[in-house]
Image 1 (cartoon, rainbow over the protein chains, first blue to last red):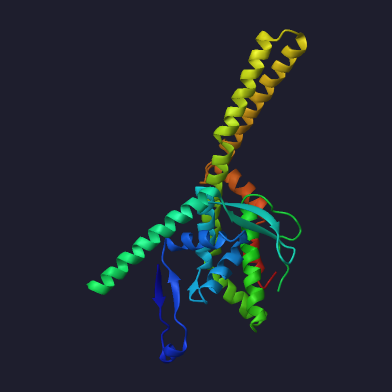
Image 2 (image 1 turned 90 degrees about the vertical axis):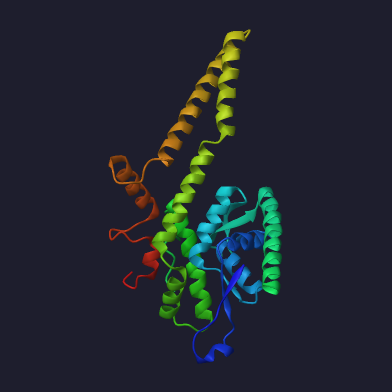
Length: 123
Length: 165
């Protein structure tokens, strides 16, 4: 779930509204992005931003604790490797348990989305 | 952009690795901003602003890492292996038909016992308190040393942003 964060000021209409991630949705997005292959932290943030057409911005300060928590849960695993510019980088990938969790989170998200839509349309 | 403080191959373990990871992210962000036309100074400032409180993030990651390491070290698989070794060793020791088998049995008992002790010690070290206190202070100092803290108590990531360095 996202919250629109409208820019303040007169030029509001010219600025593309961005969205801050609500707690809980970051895990879902990370798992989904990693479903396509292993990535390091920066690339995960960049992929989420690019895929959402820059509408979703991962707070960088919350990205790494989230990655570590997911690793602790056993949903992702990490391994050091060489990055594109030959620097050592830590790459994360989805585990079998992570894939299962992703399916559960997507189902949960769809139920929540449906419920909110129902409330918005009828309340 | 300044060179990474980690490229000399030191500070690889524990919080050092966390800092290396955070530093890598920040450096890529600085590079991206500079490619978008930011000056080096402005890019560093913006990257730092976007990342937020480095100390808090690093501490949070370190705490989770500690829990992961403790759980892995205390893995039931490893513990079971040590008991299997000891059990096999005892069986060979008492029922081995020749001296060589009994020797192998004794070796397995010793290896199993040593392995179990190492697991116990490793878990104890990982779970050692990091609050002030004799053992805690020693642990903090060791971790700081591993992480490459300088005399001013700054982490390598913070040094990365420090214009004086």
